[in-house]
Length: 162
Image (cartoon, one colour):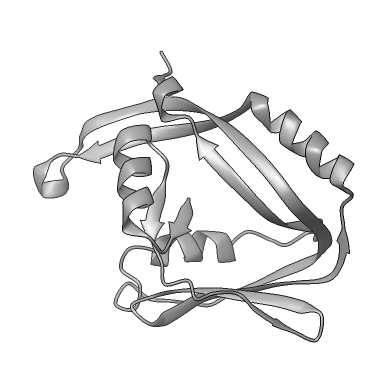
């Protein structure tokens, strides 16, 4: 599940490739006292806040290695289009899409996330996703990465998994 703030990649990714993208209000990240912060809302109702701090830069060589390794990247997705009236599916099958990332700069740091309780009335598209995430226990935070990069989903190489 991926929230996007631009309709074009949502429609292309979801309908053509099966990428589970939905709309979210995502303001530009902010930076204050060494910490980057961002949030995501639906209809003005905040669903999450996240931050990353204590960032350490990755070397140019490590960025190149990560970019080179991404040449074999695959996104396993599920293409799903409901029937009219939301009774079952018109289309429902797994897909795989190759991807290619080019990482220009990257940093490793300590990331955290805070999920807010939202109701169906507040976030009709995302409330069940946030509820599911809130039910998962946080056992341990792992290092987080922030990057200046491009990521191409190679749509012409997408295929249905049989």
